[in-house]
Length: 217
Image 1: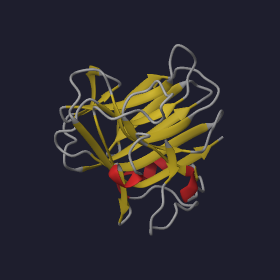
Image 2: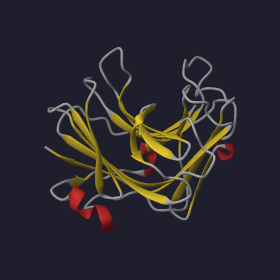
Image 3: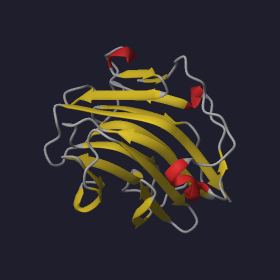
Image 4: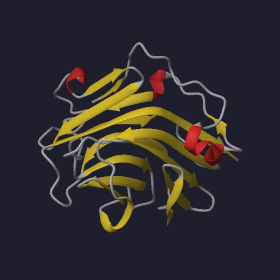
């Protein structure tokens, strides 16, 4: 089930660049104006939103259990509580920015992805967490950060559609450059999405703040 998140915090506004340790990464980009209605929560279809999602003090908290249902009775996917940023793009360079906090114990979950790709792929990028390591998909040889548990980590993910590549920065440092997977339409997602590799934990959670999207031609 997909629902629009609501809270007492202000919607993400446009204008300006990134702040602090990642400001240089968004130089030359324009911040995309997003309304709160474009942060669409996808959660297990048989539980209320409040049992898998919370937003308070500018932090979005999402959690899921490994045995949870998919987002609809007819959906083939597995357990997730994710936010789809409802801003589809098909050209240019796009960048996702956000601070993520992964509590100790969460393992076997995707915490961020670029959805959309040419078959047989479904995504252009997925960032997983296994035992406190942030990895490219489920490849444990491609570790972007070795210790992400219980601390705020700044992620910047740039997707150059024409060049067909993706670059990931962790705390302002370039940690990955990878080829894209084609496709004509893309959008960003973040939260927790159970994976079938490396023994996923019973419960998975991620918290996010300062999420923004940028673009340039």
